[in-house]
Length: 576
Image (cartoon, rainbow, N blue to C red):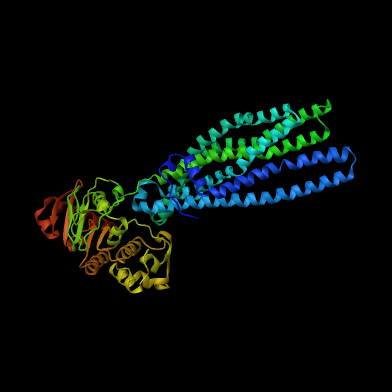
């Protein structure tokens, strides 16, 4: 499957997106339409052959003619079966291609979004898009095969019937508009209720992901019964919305079978009356029955295709919503190079200046303020006016891959994927056991590996659910240290460990990155005391900069902040 990316025009609406999926495999779509047309049109051949066998064989009492037409009927049946197999195989490939293509562009887009993904859409929504929505959209492409074939077969039967009786042809041609009038309101209701159902489904899936991720915490706090009750209530609410979708959907399914059957009965009754008056022959009555009976398949295909398109309109919009999440892009596609020697990293909005070669601590009464600065410094913010510069170069104009090769953001909530310790720490880089061991030691995580049965080959579960909070934090830090970036921005990298481990972590971090630049957001007095420079933020702006000891003596607000934090820590320790 050739990788391609839809344009902005292709994402203008669900049907434009479906059109892009169809164009992406145009040759296969054309082949499916050809098979659909020949198969559906071929279904009209047996009734015509059967009418010839009746008139020229049975009525005329000609055994040779009867045998000849019977052999032709057998050959037609075999050919129709082969066409059906080819049609089904082609449509399966079309659905699989569309499904994989949707997953591919969604995964590539979410990977480019990086940490900004979580701020734009919940994890449950992404899961539902990848599992449910792509399948619904792929199923809608079925209309390109049987759907096109159904239209052609319907018109072909009308033309053939016109040669037999213009009245019968007129009845057949009037049938589909009447069916559309009957089913159309139901399809609109499916679209409306399906959108509501899909919204609730995404929310419930997001809640499930959150519950599973925090199961250990819930066990410790005894909150599982409350969360389970809330989840059950939301599940029942989703079921009620599901019933609202199931109602019109079931009616469409019933009408796709029932209406063609009533249509068949009406046409057969009319043709029988015409045969009784001598307007058409007995063989033509048999042919009319066969033609109209055959029309049950294309009419049902058209109705089912309408239902698929109604559901795909909802699912397609959900996929588009994810693909429309903004990615940080270079202006006019241009990029500039960073100086090889680096330089100060400056955030003009907050006034933060990160000097090269130092361990700098960012501290704020509200940790979210320090986190916002890290997002801008790490080029994770989608705000084009952030204006952050590194060595005088706007980082928004630096090639993304080049920037990431020199700057790493270590988010405390960064995902841990399932795999061996070796693969988890190495990440996207080639594993080097010597460097992995060094990174683990710098993060004070070697004891974690030593306790595991297979060392670096030991498996870590998805999300690190088989590790404690402090262990996950140290493994994340080791992963951030492994590439040995020129500039490391770490968010609350020691918040989940005890004081002794925290002291060891910060001391080893200083030694490991003695010639590199490291920034860490923290409220820990222990980390602040060991930092080369402390930057104090109040209401998102720098109020003071200096060594911890100097700030304690000279800055009353900083001294009060540190004392309050220390008091909170002592209070928690006393409760433990």
